[in-house]
Image 1: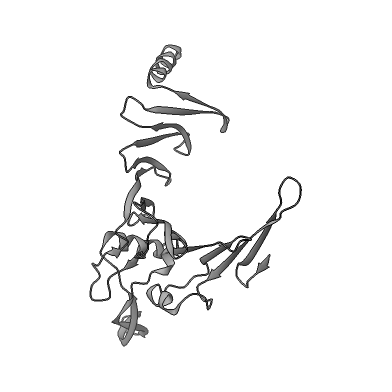
Image 2: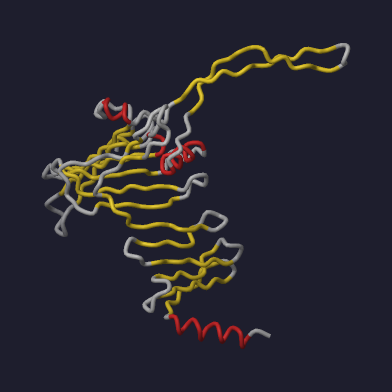
Length: 281
């Protein structure tokens, strides 16, 4: 395994069949934003700086190759604008016997633009919170066709994952990568994405510690997680909430250690709750 000055460069794995023969070699190469293999046009579209893996190339012994491209919150830059502020100096006023601020030194500073579109603003908020490696988009390319892709949006302010999208159809001959369509004079512009994306999952609420509580899939299946012990430990997980086919898993703890899980139908829960009420002194 070769190591670049800030990360893995290349990994080689060799496997054999049950007889110890017929070796199959898989090679994975990792590329970063400042590597020559990354086109300058890519760095222009995504000017943010970071040291995360941007491109992964996987090859097998038959030279079959798959590319994976990753984008993070740090890749997006919403630009700056200049503003004039006044620096202050302090002098001692002997008559008033106090220090007095005199702010008469103009200073021009670059200030970050703040996008107003919700999805773009969420990416901006992620960067402000230094959550720069939050995944925005990832896609796979094989034989010059897109064979898989995922795109994520986040809640403004909190930086929590909101919606996840996947491709409706694939493979695709052409693909529009997720990018911000605005500039300094158009801060309300949206994030442009490929038209084949379809919503696959939404996390609709979190608890006070940032743990997901409720979610919903594209097909309307709702899930809910209940917590106990100061909202830190998941207690019940219900899939298909509000439907006759719902299933609930209950985790029981002993001294904050998970002992076992039970899967119950809704009627089982009614009986369990009734037993708990009768047993309560």
